Image (tube, rainbow, N blue to C red; front, side):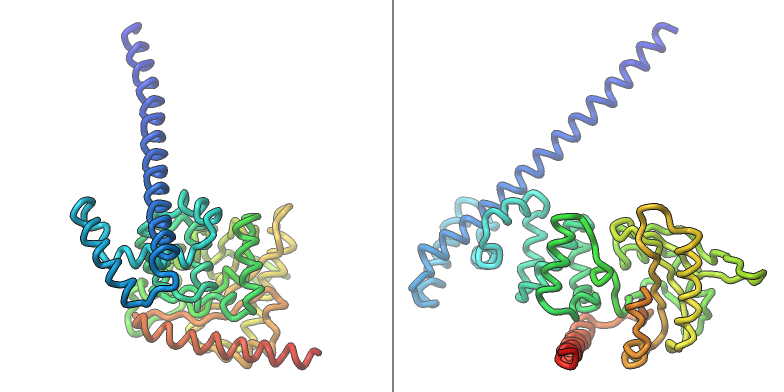
Amino acid sequence: MEELKKGENVDALYDKISILIENAKRNVAIKVSSELTILYWNIGKHIKENVLNQQKAEYGKEIIKQLSNKLTQKYGRGYSMKNIFRMLKFYEYFNNFEILSTLSTKLSWSHFCELLQIEDEIKRNFYTTICINENWSVRTLRERIGSALYERTVISRKPEQTIKNDLQLLTNENKMTTDLFFRDPYILDFLDLKDTYCEKDLEKAIINELEKFLLEMGNDFAFLGRQKRITIDGDDYYMDLLFYHRKLKRLVVIELKLEKFKPEHKGQVELYLKWLNRYERAEGEEAPIAIILCADKSDAMTELLELDNSGIHVAQYLTNYVPKELIQQRFIESIKNAKVQLEQREKIKK
């Protein structure tokens, strides 16, 4: 028995020391990654300030070519001409060292390489903020950019200052607004549905591919149940899917519709929200919200119904693969139209 106790003590000691070793290795890796990122930033800064300023573009290109050849010979392929120009862009896009220093502890150089492909500053800040908030891998970041997440998020249709304020709120206070959460459309091509299917098939497919569905919705999304029954005056009603969003601190109902959105869908979901608000809302939580996922919708109708005021968001879902270029082109136009309409409404109010 004494030997068994000693064995148990050694195992416990081994487990604790293993944790210390793994934590130390992780911290070292983060430190090395951060230092490498700052090195690349400083290289970009030095080239920008001492080589390219007040020099012709062709002269600068020739200098960088010669520099790349010498650095590559001594330090390897990481200093190719392409990578050096990437370091230069890195400095130009993230020129505040204090901010960069903080970001370098949270994002790897590979993350930054993906972000550097985004020329629009607001859009780049969106992906930077959400990537950190949801702890995305480089692969996930690439996929989110490829699926035009920013263009599909409601916040992209808002004024620039609103976008900046919402991103700062998430960064500084860890609070997310519904505009950062709601998307339209949702890309559900991973469900692998047949040509014909019913709402139950769609619901079942979402449950079967819950991990991928949650990734599309966001990392703070937690699944609570399907077909939640509520009883009102002896009649039973069933909510398709019920979730909870940790940062929003809200219950989220998802109602699935195979048809185009209809006005009566609003009344149905409003009933669910009022019931949840009265009987399920916990202390400290915000009022429940809902997403109606439908095959199609009319923006004019949803605007007339003033769904935003009732905590209901209507979005289309896409179950077939859509090429990246088509997604981005389509939603960029949608953003432009939404902002024009917003400006017109503001003028009418004034």
